[in-house]
Length: 503
Ligand SMILES: *[C@@H]1O[C@H](CO)[C@@H](O)[C@H](O)[C@H]1NC(C)=O
Ligand SMILES: *[C@@H]1O[C@H](CO)[C@@H](O)[C@H](O)[C@H]1NC(C)=O
Ligand SMILES: *[C@@H]1O[C@H](CO)[C@@H](O)[C@H](O)[C@H]1NC(C)=O
Image (cartoon, rainbow, N blue to C red; front, side):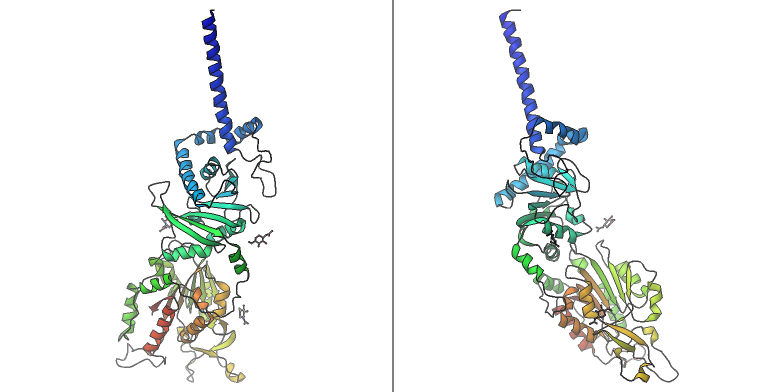
């Protein structure tokens, strides 16, 4: 072997070693980015974020390889993975530039099962980042539900929810509340959503995040370009808002609804009220159903805490809940809780068998008190109006002998019941057919502010209508006029409630 050949082989050896070391270094450095948690069992939250010893040693690398396994390793080198990570990196860099995120931010990514967003954060230098998803994906994602985060209060500076996590959530209110709980005061949350595009759903969104103040929103391209653009919303957790929330006024306090512009807009776009008294109300009002603009056909009703339908004067199940609400009301795929308020015992039995329907065997009234059916008591023609259900109701008279003579029913303070049953974060639809009592109930709802809780009402207004049987004759059953009904409808629309003329 001559000297030249010896030198060449030495050089080759050095070169190979250098390349080997370089590759090894790259591997270690890459792992150093990724591996930021020492093990999954330290600290009360089930793991710890920043390693106590920030020096990543080869021991960690070994442990790490055991933790990821072959499958994820393949994935991490795939094109799709890289594309995702780059997508998030670029969004996060924008957020850093705008000051909502910094390399020091303790960060949480919610429900991205394979943690591309967490990886992107760490890669751009936000090293104290972790993800949660139903199934753990170490070392990026630990196991946890968005609606019940496995973290202490005030843990994070930055939380991020992409991938339609909130849109898909069956418990959006808990989803948002948990972010509010684990975010530090002054921290930022960024949410991606395909909804919140109209003012109504955007406001529902903001109400859901009552922890936080709206900072900005913009439309961005989706990672999957076949899906239309998504909205990126930035919110900040404020200390003042929290203090305000804690001392929120009690439910019984009286208050006027404020009618925001977006509600006025919905009402402006609704079908107009029928101004002129119809000569054949039994035809005109029935036909009017074709003109009705349902709120859920005008706006996106996402981001509500619950979806509730209240049928006041429900009568039999089939008369309106089964035949109309279940079948025809546009529900945007939401599951509604149904309350049937019906005092007439004749209808109670069938509700016992209906799932998802809660029967309140009372009459909707102004106070909790015993009432009686006002029934035309011609001698010998007892209980003739029974079939009409909840008749015109009046407070019970003091005479005991008289009271014994009538059908006693329990009236409930309806405005109060509504306030204790639903909140402004719920989507509430109501049908009301109470044989004239609407002239007591509606003003009471408005006066107590309970009306603010209702999104949409289908109201049958009872007046001295022209009769089908006898042309030129008005019904003598009700004293109110059509004009008074119109006033009632107008007052509701002024209160921000989308009311429809029902029959
Ligand atoms: C955490 O926050 C929730 C609500 O935000 C509160 O009910 C709870 O008491 C807090 N827990 C602690 C330990 O402070
Ligand atoms: C409603 O849900 C069904 C089944 O979950 C789904 O196939 C359908 O696309 C949904 N429709 C809308 C409008 O979201
Ligand atoms: C009225 O009755 C309801 C239901 O029975 C009850 O929850 C409420 O406290 C009562 N209200 C008053 C003022 O008695």
